[in-house]
Structures are given as structure tokens and as C-alpha cells.
Amino acid sequence: MSQIFDLNRFLHLVGSHFRKNLKTYLISCVVFAGVTIGLFVLVVSSYREEAIVAGKQFFVYLIVIYAGLFIFTVGVFQPFQRPREGPFQLMLPASGFEKFLLGWLVSLVGYTICANVVFFVIRYAVLQYYAAQGYEVSGFLDYDRILFQQNGISMAWVLAAIYLFLHSFALYGSLMFRKMAVLKTALALLLVVLAYWVVNGMLYRSLFQLDIQQTPLLPLMPLFLQGDGMVYQVDIPDWPYWLLALSIAVMGLLWVASYHKLREKEG
Image 1 (cartoon, one colour):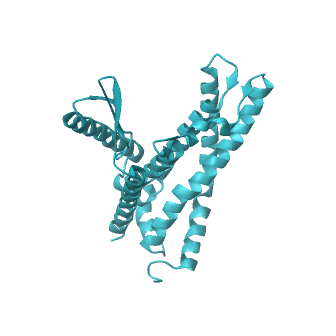
Image 2 (cartoon, rainbow, N blue to C red):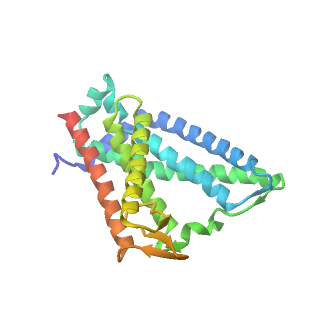
Image 3 (spheres, rainbow, N blue to C red):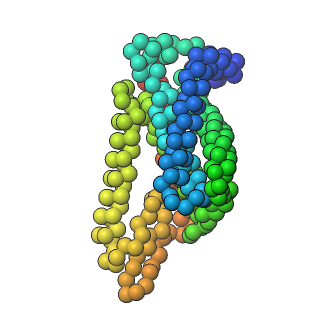
């Protein structure tokens, strides 16, 4: 077991990692804060009314948190791809699993905690500034659409699944692409999404003669058809649970594939 995971060895790896990268992470937090401020100002100034409703705040949250996750995660294993730094990273006194676990924890758990802390600190400061200017400010949790359930599933659940999928896809891209990893991974993700929508649309049009009112955002979600003034819902029994199982399987496969990519580089 010690060949795969040893707690003392892992803690030593964690300490070494943060001693080397702490300055970079602090600078990243400053950049993240600056982008958040800029996006808040841009969104607020794009509306004529002097009010910052919860929907605007949630829009900024989604953009900065999700984009930040993607960019940060793609870069987490990039040191292993560099000609000079790669051999040193691969020769660190730690198992491949420990190196992967560290990258996984830093990019998912560490990023999520830090990004949310920075966002809400900046949000508080920005809203205090606009409130002093006479703007009407709503609470972040006033955005109740995130908890609204439609067909047995809430937006919060869907957003969480997309968040984890983004992480798993970006982590694989970090080990797949050596140069311009962020752009190449983003392009690959765009192609996957477009291919899904195109194939999905062709499949549904070939199966159903009625007009498609709403195509599913994710696989296994209900399909809505319209014909003769009626709207029909086509779905499978207990589809939210099937969708949960599929999401876990896809994300798990991407994480496992990323781990094996790292092991390939060690070999």
C-alpha cells in the first residue's frame, strides 16, 4: 500500500508543492479578484436601472467561477509537460497516485474554496460601493431559480454536474495537450458540445415527426414535442437518477483517464 499512497509522503509532497507555488496562487487570486470587479462593473453599467438584482450577481458568479475553474484546472498538470520541468516533476519522491491526488484536490477542492471566498469578498465590497451610490442591491440568495425544480431536477443540480464535468474535462486536457493547452482544451470541449447537439437533433428528428419544442440540455433529460396544439413530454422513468449515474460514469472515466495519462508520462 505504501507504494501507492503513504500519508507522510503525501503531506511532504503537499508542503513542497505549496512552498513552490504559493506566490503563483496568490497572484492568481489577485487576478481573479480583478476580473470579478471588472465583470461586475461591466454588467452593472450595461443596465439603465440603478439596481443590482440577484440575477446579475449570479450571472457574474457563473462566468468567473466556471471560467476560472476551467483555466486553472487545465494548467494544474502543465509543469509535467514542460521539457525542463517535466522530468523533475516526474522524479519527485511520490507515487503517481499521490501526484494525481494532489493535482485533483488543488484544482477542484482548493480552487472551489478559494474562488468562492474571493468572489464573495469582492461582491460585498462592490455592492457596498454601489449601495453608497444609491443603487438598490438584492441579496445573492434571492435568486430562487437555482432551487426551482422542473421535472424532478433543480438548476443547482444541473450546474453542479456541469461544474464537475468541466473539471474532469479540463484535467484530462491538462495532460493531453503540451502547448496552448487552454485553447486546445476549450476547442475540444466546444467540438464535443456541438457534436452532441447536432447528433442529438438529427436523432430526434429522425425518430419523431412532431416539432421539437425543447431539446434536452443534457443526455437522458426529457424531450418536449409539439403537435396539434398539444405539448408532449417524452422521457424514461426515473430519468434524474439515470442522468446522475451517467454523469458520475463520464466524470469518473475522465478522471481515471487523466490518472493513466500521468502514469504514462512516468513510464
